Image 1 (cartoon, rainbow, N blue to C red):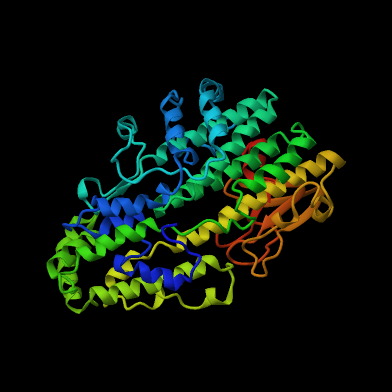
Image 2: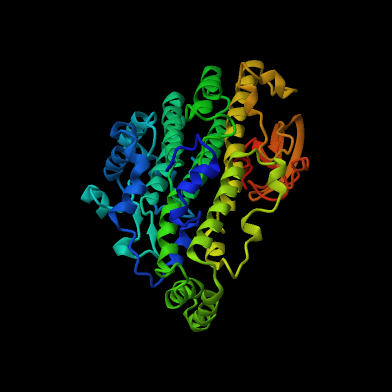
Length: 498
């Protein structure tokens, strides 16, 4: 947080109005100041961006030690990307022997994760001033407006988190194949906790990446638990479901309510907005046109001339800097209130401040805040993955104890996993997920992995359509169908040769 939110939201945002900002995505922010003379490298701005980390002791920040361990890692057997990442690694994959060896050779990363799991934040500093040169050279940095160019924000360090996550998956499978389940999950849980630290970053692009990576990592844990469900042991499963997973961060609950909106973009956007207004607080026609036509024509340079002319005309009727600042902060206030509400609070159905903004008079505002809604969807998916992981581990513990899945999920509460984690973030009544005992009956589920035949039991959440559809179709945090949490369909599909 960049300010103490214990007071009223509107009172706090008044303090920020001089920043004239919004929650832009990294892409939108990068586009907002083409041709601007403003520099985000000002010591004042960088100090404000780094202020949250300055209140956390170095010992409670994990980034420096995590990146030091990362620099010692050997090269992965394949380039991390669409074809090789934490979700594609498993013992049956082609080349798993080389992947397993890579994991075994990098045990120091596992040790580092275990050591750092109880830190408060990842805490990657913004900018390169005072950062170890070896980190800068390897791109283990968060760069705000390199060279003073406010059209760019870069987070190359996210690539390291991608590699570390792939390593963790490989090492967990390697250890499980060797029957070392406690060691595997010690590293896995530590990784989830470090990624939870990364989720507390203050820029939108960082937060979106980290939330997605944490959700993906949770889905991998479900895959691994399913794959070795007959071998893990009751004590380990109960420990995971009641003592480890529920406490990735001490202050969280099953709804991950402590995840905050990214507010670093607020500061950068303030610089950007001021850069397109003149000293009298009116839109600077030339600078306004250069900035926003540059955004529109990025990737399509031939459209730039016409866009510049249109933006010159917009500048002539655009609201003043003061009016734009007030409008931006009204939108920010609205987003902030909604972020703290339950997903289906009646207010959430009302038009947002952003949706009723005059798109000409406040064109700069419209371009600045468009991406924030993606975080609401992503948070729901993350909560579903979180609750599904805890519930799935608990169900497996029950099955080992009683040699069958429960015919009623309530039988597995308390002893095998906390009842509160049977929670569906897509349920408008804030109720439970749907659980069905199948026994030997097969349930066909259409999914991205093909048609999967499920037996034993099935646990699923709604999706954004708000309806249970008997899990006929699975979609991971999508708009239609259901979100199948257990069994994990990716792992099942591998067993069925999909």
